Image (cartoon, rainbow, N blue to C red):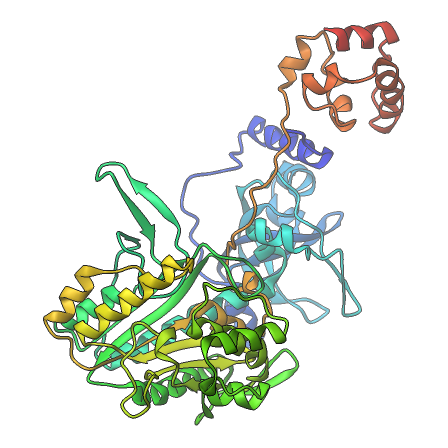
Length: 571
């Protein structure tokens, strides 16, 4: 591992603390009794409150001014200024704690605990006058330095690759990021409270499934060694939740992770969170009304209003929402009457629009692709798209009055699908035939077609009451409610390519070649990280580059001769 000068210096400070008998990583509890936001909101000088406070957090800045200094502490809830005075911290003759530990051995990023009292400075800033402090965790890596001046931010930690890979750093230096995830938690808790009030039961269902079902998607596949059988990470939990309705629960819900082995973009991650719930004796009309209430309640809880900004648009989440059939929406935005076209005619129309289609796509799949191409982007305000073709919805009850359609809706907001709901199919004979149709699509090459689930069919044969169910994408809902355009912004740890870590040989391996330890960091700075790289290097170039690196790193040792460098390389 190659360490920067700052990292080397911090490790040296760690050793100095240990030599002084100070543990930079103490084990004992630190008795925090207040947070920064409480002090800033409630401190009143005339009342004499907050005269015995204990805080802990991360140092985010210093202003050392001789015998007195200011620092900024960031705890879980915000930031507050600290005031240190040498004679308060060190009332006796020994001033080491201030002069050495505080001024020389602490760094931005260190976690400390402080005890003291709150006061207001001459500049009117609420601060903590520190009577004593304790090092709780020494930071060995420096934080990105984010500077603000005149309302402008400089050197921000803004590269997405770094932010998503090192989310822990992102949360430290970009406080607004933490607010996104606090809102995400409130979205879930708000919906959970609504369901609990209605008497529905929160449940857990299997993530590893023998049959991938409940949605049309490509699954992740694994193998169970003991059972010697293939298993799939679930693409949906629908079929298990409906088994529970068969078992006698009138309402069940689950917030759970789903996994789909598909593409990644600004609105798709292979691992995502979905809410699904099912309620007996209801239909999709009832579910549309409840969905409006859910979205309106969530917006109000998070923002105190139902109209919020999403990108360049103002979205009104108060119902009622417009309701369009999928065929009507396609006709409105593309001029194509899908009801009047055969499968081949529809495929030809898609090709005419420049869409990529193949012969493995049935009519339902083609309608879905045409809808995505021509309609979705136009659905900015919350809109229910209803009454899908039966081919597109193998788990949905046939429409009570429209031949060839099913009782299904999807909710679209800001051009994206947010929810998907049905009047659930509970006829076991019909359901088996639908699964068989899916098998036929799979044989034609549709790798997203559903598999046959014989146990689910068996459960329906015991009779499932009329039921309505819905799935709501929590990640996309959070994007909407926090005005984020990328799903990666609302996932703590989005899926990414594996990090490429450069191979580095140990210093002892270099020393075995006869290389003095003083020159090993210089070689590493030159990009020679392994003996293999050294073997491939040109001796003249290495010798010349070492001369320049000697000046840059201010190495006092005498330069090795060209013959010595050649000996290093030739081993």
